[in-house]
Image (cartoon, rainbow, N blue to C red; front, side, top):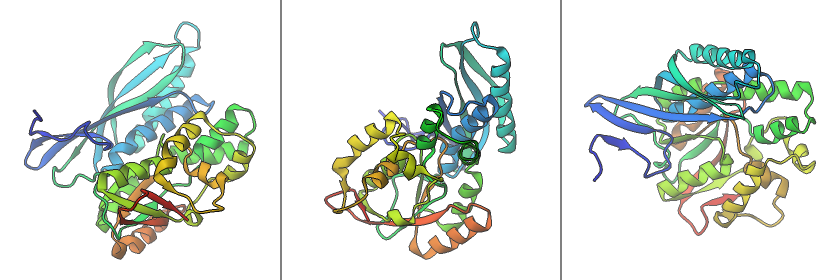
Length: 313
């Protein structure tokens, strides 16, 4: 039997769990951690924290406090590396006005870091990913391609200037985008992470009982992403995403296979995928741009449910 206090649980693909505390207060919780995507431990710590907070921002809430989640090979690796990871994480959390109040670590042959995050919200103001409506517009706030570029980094094919750009993108908090969307009658939102843009959009359409028309020409990518795909700098998760998603896609004749792969690229600390009414989409986009979220663009619209869940153009 479902507990009446549980407002959002594991029965859907929502980004966090939500429990009601009182008529005007609910608590929201999420956890996320992963292995390093860049070599610099401080940057890795910052990226991991920005990523962990994104689920909260996607649901329109304010993160309050967090616990560190750490796996580290303490017997074989310099403790200074761990200290830099935690310093980067702590400073990113401070930028987000989030208190890190403790945590837990385990001995692990592979480094892992992230946060368990607690947030507060109003029970009637939760932004879900399953409440899109036909006629709504889609806004994506960050460029795609982090999975491609970090794969190139692992293979020692990424020059320093591109490493700087992808690192900056992954370290960017989604806080400002979240605050802006709330002022423009947002209907649904999610953050784009491991399932790629198409994977997370599919979850939204399945939850809403709708389909989406995606305009690939409007989507922003980090520099040279398409070129690296052609050089076969492709993460394993991209291939898994593509295999899973293909039956749900309407792909027009001649559609670029390179573009299709890019749309399936698993993201680390990606942007918000915001769904909101046509009447407010332009004003929301303009405000995002005024707040230096330059890559934000309207990338498509929600349509009545059809034979396929996502129609590519």
